[in-house]
Amino acid sequence: MSAKATPSPEREESTASKEQRLRAFLKRKASDGEMYFKSKFIADEVNLSPKEIGALMVKLSESAPDLDVEKWSYTSATTWRVEAA
Image (cartoon, rainbow, N blue to C red):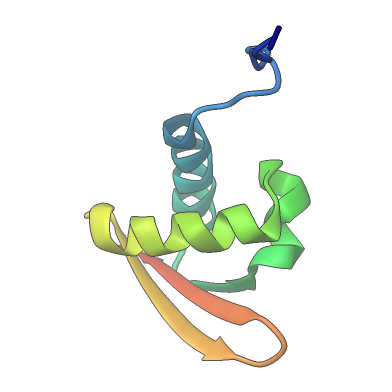
C-alpha cells in the first residue's frame, strides 16, 4: 500500500505569489531610483530563500515591463541592479 503525501496549503506557496511579493518589494524599493542588492541580504524581508530570489529575478528580468532588472556583478554572490522602468 502506498500513500501519497499531499502538501498542505500553508506550506505550498505558488511561484506566482512569490514572484508578486518580490516584484512589489522591488517596485517599492526602486521607486526613488535604482537599487543594488544581493539576494541573501533581502531574503528575510521578502520571506524567500536567496536561491528562490535568484530564480525569480531571472524571470522578472524577462517579464516585468515596469522594472529594469540587470544582473550587475558577481563577487561571492550575484548583485542585482533594479530600477523602475
